[in-house]
Length: 265
Ligand SMILES: [Zn+2]
Image (cartoon, rainbow, N blue to C red; front, side):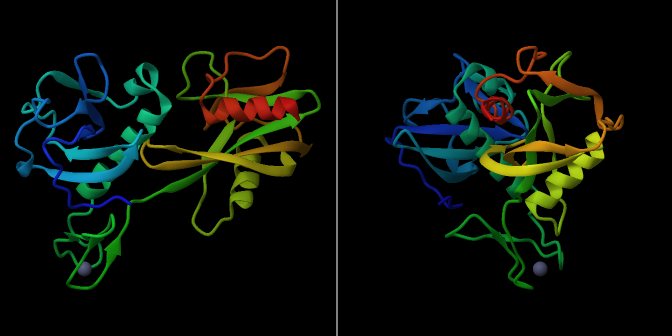
């Protein structure tokens, strides 16, 4: 479990996730810094909040809360977190996402949302606590459904407004307060595509730290309704034969895994 009070030993080899806003400090090779504090040319960490986040490959992972584009860190540079998705492996990317979410949580919970008193970090779990009114906050996780919908030997793919040119993916949307995952899925699919689905099956999940989503992956089958793509959310969308797919998300993404599962039936 992550804890907010950490004093890493200077001779402990560890992974260091130095976060500044939505940027992460990467070494000169473009990788997440690994090594002992003696080896790395980091500033004196007593000036920083350090959070122990758990382990990766049997080594501790620490979050260091840096100032905006902190110039005290040398021998590398701050880069947008998404950059790590293309240059490094998924495990590191997900731990970096965790670091970013923890950092965002700490930065946005300095004061109590109920009474306005300055909050204190809890020393045995990742939480912020108000000693005035006993309000306690935990990092926010926003569940999001993502679903591959099949109709015969075709799959529904759409181009989102923020997708790269030509990239088509499956439908996704946030769960609203008070909804079950199934209700959210049925509502999103109807709102975005105008159709009803059946045989909804859950398969897997993936954290997605932009900014704090948890993608819950499903497959489903078309039940009825004519396709009607919502122009507010999507650019285009259609049924595509599995043997004639447009550009789709790369392997390793939950969208791609669900497209492949849908194809297998
Ligand atoms: Zn309070």
